[in-house]
Image 1 (tube, helix red, strand yellow):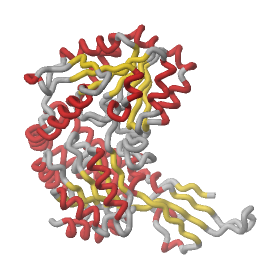
Image 2 (cartoon, rainbow, N blue to C red):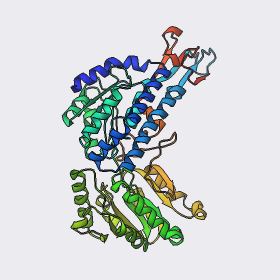
Image 3 (tube, rainbow, N blue to C red):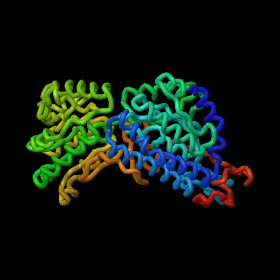
Image 4 (cartoon, one colour):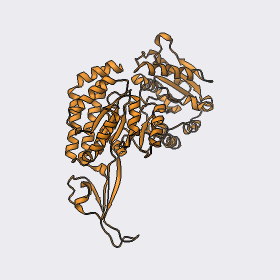
Amino acid sequence: MTPDQAVSAAAAAAPGWAASPPAERAARLTAVADALEAAREELVALAEEESRLGEARLNGELARTTFQLRLFAEQVLEGAFHDARIDRPDPDWPTGPRPDLRRCRTAVGPVLVFAASNFPFAFSVAGGDTASAWAAGCPVVVKAHPGHPRLSRRTAEAIGGAGLPDGVFALIEGEDAGVEALRHPGTAAAAFTGSQRGGLALARIAAERPVPIPFYGEMGSVNPAVVTPRAAEARAGEIAEGYAASLTLGAGQFCTNPGLLFAPAGLPDRIAAHLREAAAAPMLNERISSGYLAAAGALGARPGVRRLVWPDERDALSPRLLTMDLAAFKADIDAAAEECFGPLGLVVTYDGLDEVADAVAALPGQLTASLHAEPEEAGGLAALAAVLAGRSGRVLWNQWPTGVSVTHAMQHGGPYPATTAPSTTSVGTAAIERFLRPVAYQGWPQDLLPPPLRDDNPWKVPQAVR
């Protein structure tokens, strides 16, 4: 199927899919989840061949993917995302007589999803972007990631057997096809998970269209973590072990691996001891592993940087650990704070905790930021906590950022350049909000109102009536 055919079919299907009753739409999402589960053995085997992520990890990721679909099916049935508001006529309204005014959110139209390489299920063909767009009432065209083409096609086949209406789903392949679909006048929004370079290039195309469209790009970050002196004194071993585990999870190929740590002197050596014991793990492909080695080498050669863990060529993909003091970091912050996709950690040592806030405030936008401290310190850390929250979308207390939960309150997004749309999330039920737009109806007859705004409320969605 060509990009034009895929998007045109999606545009034709959009009105009917958006108007489909909640029970029907939820059933289709559940059917897709069931189809993926039925094909689990074959899908996981393909994913292992193409990604080398291991069967245990991939089985867990597929479970997460089917859970996401079912969770969004529940959201469709609840209907709260419509945000239905009804203002009854009020002749005595303070600003003048108020008309009958009704507002709800409705589907934006066809959504183009650019699949990610590092999560071949959860952020790929049937991942969170696709599930949330379907739940909002939007058809989806997925541009497959070249890192797992056979898995993408087999996943698409499974989806094809789940009974979705024609045009509600399509798979396209190739960089040129993705750009063509992004420029297509029928595409109403796009979602992307990947590199900053790729995301910004696509965001520019979306913004420069004759009719610009929203582009929701999640482009990663270094996810700074701060350890207070008291926490380092009380729990040095625990913190060092936890940091090493989070840094190397998935061979450092998560967008939430904590690549940057601010800590008192002494802790880097404790972390190094753990990382020296960590085995090299295969990376997704040669391009990513080469990029990791090049970025690590460049940072390791910067002024003021000291190599604590630096494997030889035989273990080239093993974890690496660098350290520098706070003054050197501030003097070279643009290079030192750049993301390296892989198991590379940079520990910045400081003398006084009060100096760390300024360094964090100078960082680019982040997906996450973590603070490791003792409970009795909380009252004196408000200023630092505010800075961490000001630079990231999710802040963690005495926890590490890998392992993003699919929940109602999850925020997976952050200030630019972590994402192109800081007010949104790509994980959790709030992800559906990206693919909705509000429409107000003033004085319309009941028969012409969308179901969420009718007095008889046939979809049984929550209504705020005033």
